[in-house]
Image 1 (cartoon, rainbow, N blue to C red):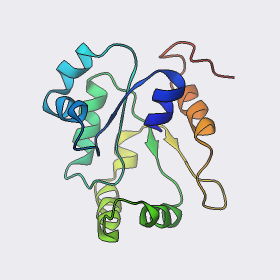
Image 2: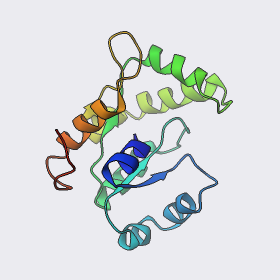
Image 3: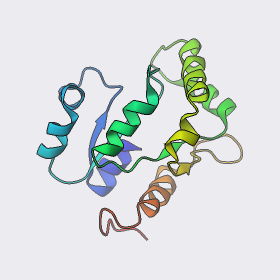
Image 4: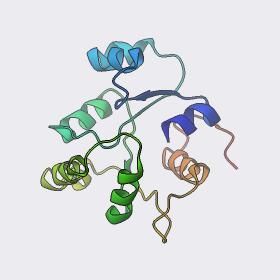
Length: 148
């Protein structure tokens, strides 16, 4: 979704999973300075890198002015798509992340709006559909982004 928001809506995108990115390293070293230096809108994403303290990381981002949104849906479909990714990550990392999310009660603790990225058949929804829902949740925080 971060790439879609970058390409179609002009956001700057930092992908926390892209450990090779200078932008990700700069954000990780000092998120506050990175945000202050950023021009325009910023979206920060990550997916299946298991994080030790998921809640505090997300709350820090919220404290820095981010509007958190949680993507969650059919976890069996999510596992199937995880295993199709070309990253080579073992399935155990998926289960570790789901365990962390469950044990830390992340969804209820964050009280963030949720978006289900899956259709009823377990396939991903169109990115444009998700982007429209996401930006609608933000209720004008970023002005007019050309939404239909």
